[in-house]
Length: 294
Picture 1: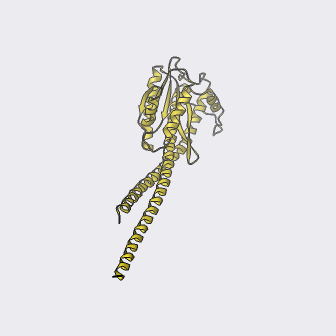
Picture 2: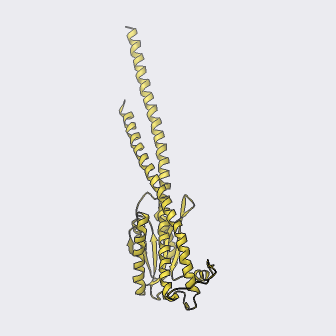
């Protein structure tokens, strides 16, 4: 074989190895998407239970202020909690959420502080005019989400006690269908009055009216904390599902490109090898004809 065919064989082998890596990453991403989506669905029943508890508190006559001590600080700042990515090979995942955050926060004139979950999204936000106040490490599994949310809630509680929080928003990507995602925004605090009014008329599952133990004023803050936990957990899980959806799409594109490259290189190899064999045969026939004339 000539050096050209040998080099083609080496390239085909390298591309085949890369093809195997891409297929493995695609399988891991597909599996992760399902796990995170199942985690989001598993929250539905618990979130409904929290909603019922909040509805019972809001119906209680002793609750006059729906914030129950969670009213915004007049001189506080706007907290934006942004869920991004720690890894590459996720397409435009981080660009989409960062552009969405910048467009939304540009409309708010108050002092703003951005809390970022994910190194790559944080580095992109640091290049903007926004101040990245707190950085959190993105969880690598479903089991690691709860400790992260607990850390965020602790930070929120400490700043709320110092009257440093005016409003809290969360920004993250949410899966759309089975192969796409889009950025969404949710205001966590202060509690939305329209939302609380809807909870007040939420149908109760039994005929007996609800009774709040220890008083609504004492119970409401605990339920609000659970509401914050579920909302943040859901946002993180949806973001991770979207991240893996983006990675899956990127790996599918890469696999398609590698398949096309392998096909082209294999065709070129067989063409070149056929040419070399034909040339050797022609040389053999020419030599044989020369010998016949001697």
